Image (cartoon, rainbow, N blue to C red; front, top):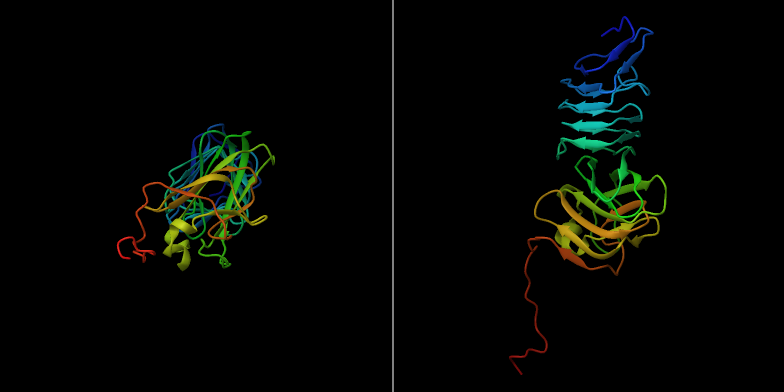
Length: 274
């Protein structure tokens, strides 16, 4: 599409096939202007239809083959019908809808999703790599903008099983936060040792100093995917992993967990046999 004159989009511009050429003209969006990608092959954004200033307030991902963001952008709302890859860029949003196991934000190359603000109401960060690996965050401290990304991490744990993931969580103004963080994952991101004993391996560690993050009991959910583990009292953010990264860990509180199996061990001494 060739733009022959300067234009203001007040409704929704739907980019289906091909690209947009400005021909030295200016494209800007009205206060409620939206941009929708609905091609039948994978698409990548460009400065032409998605400028750094005067860009769309709302973004719709309606392409089954997915969309890749070419540069960091800030929008008001994101409608995630399908997968959005960030590359190494940052996407800042106020609200996200239409989230699912096939409709999430890929951050494999180091990109991050920034959400403003995060306070007492739980906020979902629908991030993932090749699989959906979301994070839910509640902040009982000072509300702050939080950025979340996740990448693959295959380094072995010395103490037991782990997830093959590393989440990086950053606050805009360090200090003053009191976070409850819930991490989610699918079975393909579990190593063999973790899968064999999810109940005992599901612990949250901050890799900045390899300490177990937070205080109090853990809450877990292993009935349906994404499986989750949650803990409160987290005041220091950074790179997080889930697994056994220490010999001593906190207590777990289960939430409707089906047991992995049963085992009858020998009693000694046996109270029924002298």
